[in-house]
Length: 140
Image (cartoon, rainbow, N blue to C red):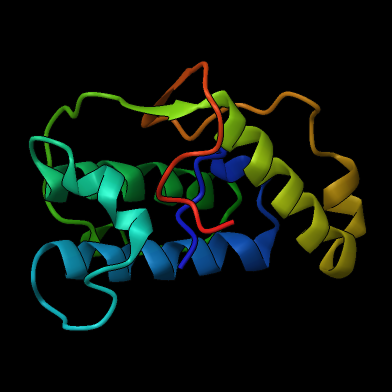
């Protein structure tokens, strides 16, 4: 499971679809509707929020909006209801790590998309970037 801290606009079509599916799974896990992936480290940052289910729903909403922008049909009805959610912090070192990880993936499956990646990417709209290294939940 990879719940990218990077803005979904940087993902290729395959990556965006995978993110959608994985975030929907994360929503089920956080709602207690599945047994698998309950201890996945990437869910920790959502669990640490006052309303974990609302946080993952807000995350999914931004992914769905990117899909709509591209003309894809991701069903917004699959996203749990949520109100305004406070931003989650993410370290700039984590963004740099994820950018390198994405560059390696795209070098193999979509070099054109990989060539368009910026040197300093934006974070997913749910996240606020702060100084720091790779997040402790990341499996390096």
